Image (cartoon, rainbow, N blue to C red; front, side):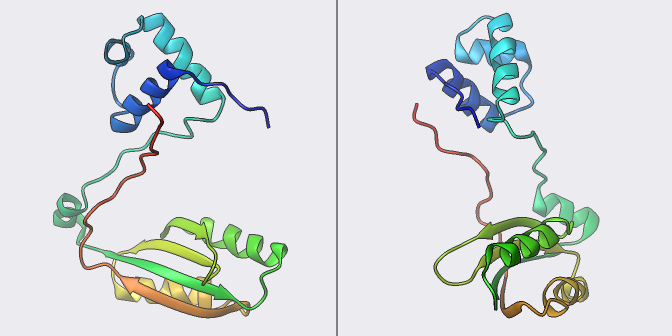
Length: 161
């Protein structure tokens, strides 16, 4: 994989986009002190290089609760019996395909994986646990922590500005 060279302007663009990816090209150019055509060209290059993986909307958990209920967020530690690369990748692929799994991390030391999962309620979590953990003979241990309050949520990467 070819490494992309980034300069101070690229870093400023990335920082602004992390704060608000809905900015117009004009507004982004103004905030980073470059011309709109230069801004457009640089952002396109950053996307093509894969530095901007995707853009999403972050929903308000509290406001969505009024519409869809509070839901259940759990942080789940998973330990496998066999930790060979094939076993790790197979588990990773299976959980990544499940819509209830928001995040999946392969970790060390300790458990093999930490997952962040979101379900509507405890019966849905139980169904998720059955299909992803109990049904997998390679899953040795599951430890779930249920969120009572989200104090912070973000995906910002600290940049050397």
